[in-house]
Structures are given as structure tokens and as C-alpha cells.
Length: 122
Image 1 (cartoon, rainbow, N blue to C red):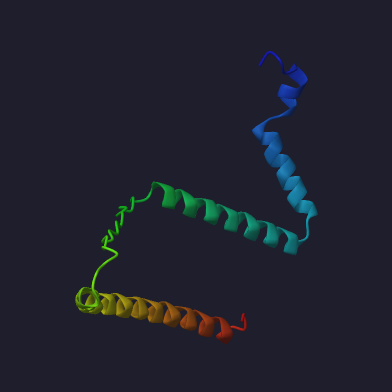
Image 2: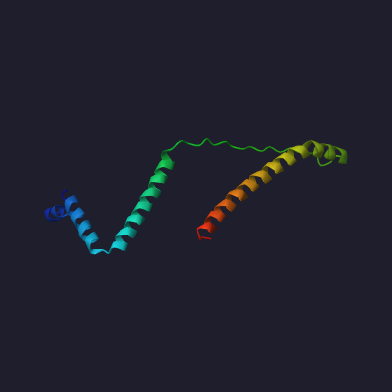
């Protein structure tokens, strides 16, 4: 590279970098090396996980479109009650499905909390 001086280009080499790293590691205490290795390993693991997630199978996106009805302001009470009788069972099914999903989520978090309690983390 024309902008680099010859001395700097000769001073920077992969072999020299490895030697510097090994000299640095030799001066460190054992627990420092263990924590350095653990931190580097966890960082690598997280980056690897993000890479897999990015390049993995794409999840299909389904748009949920909710249409609503327009009602006349001058509907009779009989018409309103008739419509409620039609919509009632549908709404009950929807609410029951939501309650079931919420109970499943609660059970999952309860199991996780129990596991954390068993190892003393909670």
C-alpha cells in the first residue's frame, strides 16, 4: 500500500499478532483466561445463532384482515338481539381459544419458574 510506510507494513504480521496474543495470555492468571474464553465463546455462540436465524428457513407471513360490518343507526332492538345471537357462539369460541392459549403460556412460565427455583436462581 503506497500510504503505508515499509516499517509499519513489516511490523504488522499475522505471526507477530499471534506471538503478541500468546505473550499477553502468558501474563494473565488462570481465572482471567477462563473468563476471557467463556466471554469469547458466548459472543461467538450468539453471533452464530443470529447467523443461523438470518439464513434459516423463512417463516411465512399471513396477514390477518378483520372486516367489520356497518350498521344503520336506526336498527330495532329485535335486529340487534338477532345479530347478537348469531355472533354469540363465534365470540365464545374465540374467547375460549384465547383463555386456553393464555393457560398454556402460564403453565410454560410456571415450569420455567419452578426450574429456576430448583437451582436457586429465582
